[in-house]
Image (cartoon, rainbow, N blue to C red):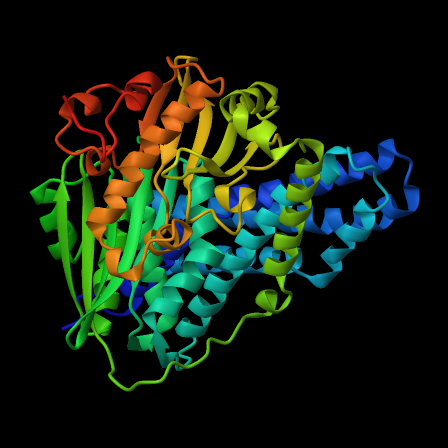
Length: 521
């Protein structure tokens, strides 16, 4: 039996959850801020004609934003004052519609005129420099528009039952919606990894499935909010006539009492939204005839496992894109990122051997010249078994854009060790090193034969590469006293509890660890 309340209580619960889910206010504010900046730059550089028609667009956007915020306040007051369900539902629907309308306006093709407007401005103007961040916001707003679109279709009793491939859904949804959320929400402190993704056909409402999956992601990101390095690993694996979806994080974990509450609490619709969201998760799993389990340890992390029956011989139905996806925003976004990478590469171009021989110095120099609010540098590096640097790319944090490793090295960001150099709360400098994001890609990058690919081999290779990187960075100009934080320290350096006690771990100590082939005294 599906465990959800009937009628209006279910509608109220799901509307509350959707609104909690949207996380769109800051992105809309950033879009408005961008266009205000464009208007200011047009005035500064005396581009009067472009400023005239751009001002009209901006005023319409501002008016809709004011209207949207008023409806949000009305909805929030209805919830806080425990108004009748009918009043909360009406206010919630009104707010969701206002968000949908403002997203539709922002995604209207006429806003493409911003490209033409920017062409009148110099390349070093603030507007032109902040365009990549603006495009990232547009991409996120498209994801919000998409989710509201299908939520409203579901509420209008449209038949959304279809066959879809769980692996394709996870890959598409993570790339186009989830990845941006995780990056923005965690300030790039949390990364999402896609592990094994077995193809399996499910039957049901794919958009409800996506909303359920997004809830798992939000819970995991919230649980890792205190972490310097958070990792959320997503996988699905075939198990007979079922496929098991797993979401594993290394966050704060939960007590057994909290797990029991999440798995059994059916009525507390006015409680914390975290619990309310899990009621929705259970509803969705039940509608797919699946089962749910949670394994968690306080301060170590949580794994949610969902077992779903799959249809052998089924055929996936292609997903129909909503209007904003037809605008090919992803291509435009990637083009903007590509232009930024090319410009920076030209500006920092130097002989390959020279750059590699000073990579530790270069990373620190990027950190020192960064003009971001919170200065830092981002890099990716690969060192082979002969201690030669076979991959190195780097960049300082940008003032107007939260740069990711995908932006830095789109071809290899999943296959290499990735790093950041940042300032800690106590104003000391710390180095963050992250293991390769995709095991298969890493094996291919390292040229490992198929017969030798196994979890033990992966751990051995990454263990050694972390040590080689530490030695190389020290040898090329980075201070040996800088503290290091490693993802999955216990995984790659097992039975070395003393390392875990050093938080952060001095770079020099990491460099002094033994490689797998080195004999320990």
